[in-house]
Length: 561
Image (tube, rainbow, N blue to C red; front, side, top):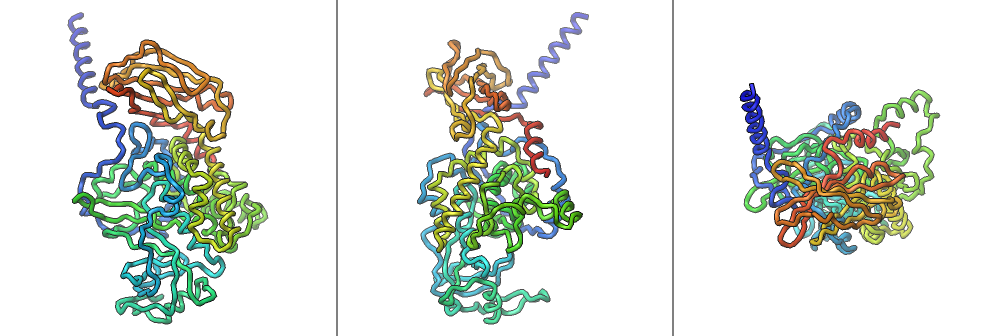
């Protein structure tokens, strides 16, 4: 009997070792990775089309009732950051950035040459009038004009928002404010325009006049335009906010679980990017280091600020196109049941539209339709995004706004002021919502230091006490051996006396904060440091568990109103 028990124990031990050996270590030598290796060739990727009506319908009537999975973002590295990739490049918040860099954005030193435009075809998407054309240097541009009701508004919104989203880390299209003179226009012999019948026939001067009738005209007969440069590579069409591309071997994380796409719920709230849909994105196939990869762009961020609102539409950012209870309530009361957006004291600015910051609440902001990535935003994603929004100083915001080239200084000042107010509202909502310990470091002598993002931003009082629980971490098995506990009233504390210091050692430190106002700060930020010849190096950080159901549910409950 005893021999049988002994054999069973040995078998269990063997199976346990086998299980450990197949899972691999928690941390590898190159952790945390700074860039995702996109090493597989994607030359077989094909163009993808997404029907706008289907996307809107699916988002409004399927996604709207979808429950968040509360799954941790799948493309974060071991320190809970988004590494660089063909989707996203870390800029603001990860390195110093200047006003000059913000004002330049992705733009090169070669703006369009408007001395002559050769028209190739009409603008095929969006409500603003425009053309595809070649400039005097033979470069292809997508021209978009302002409407007579909102002169300067659309062209400025594209320019300013492109600078902000570039600084946030997205791949953007080069855009410039330029001039279009109908007297200096030629028509390419192959240019065609789509008629109401669906047939394409040659482009004519009458077609130019018909399109320009809907555009804001300058006193000298010219038109102000936003020019977007043709992207390099093969156009593959838009990307979806859910699933992956089956023809891209590097596209491994479902898009709804990409943090930078979830974060658009925060960035979109800041800028009021309500037209959040696949149709405003673009994938291109480009050559990089001798292989083809798919690069992902936000190609149209012009429906920002107040630019998605028409003259009598004030609800953008407050409700989806169809918003269940709110829509039914207005219908059943013949419109007498007022919604929040109907009582907002907007400051009318034709060059900006209806855009305010006094009553803005980022937790209840809504785009026109809810994409899957919007629904999947977790509290740790929102915290990550809020830190990047807060990295924009007042001067950086004003530098971005100046690129809109508003002729009225009051419009310039109003847009900057609203963006600053909305920035602070985002920080106030999301930074204190979970344990805000950031930037942990462990000195060679064992002194632990960190920062409190919510306190540093002025959105929370300092906690009465910080606690750290220390343990030796076994990278092969995931097991821990307790070392001790330390406490401090400041964001620095000494390590326990028995802290190991052999090269290769990994220690796990759980950091909590005692705050009467913020019970969530008792949820530890778990950090891992690896000992190297030069000292301790941060190798891991976990802000929330992989399945943070309670926090995730709270975040999405605010959307029901």
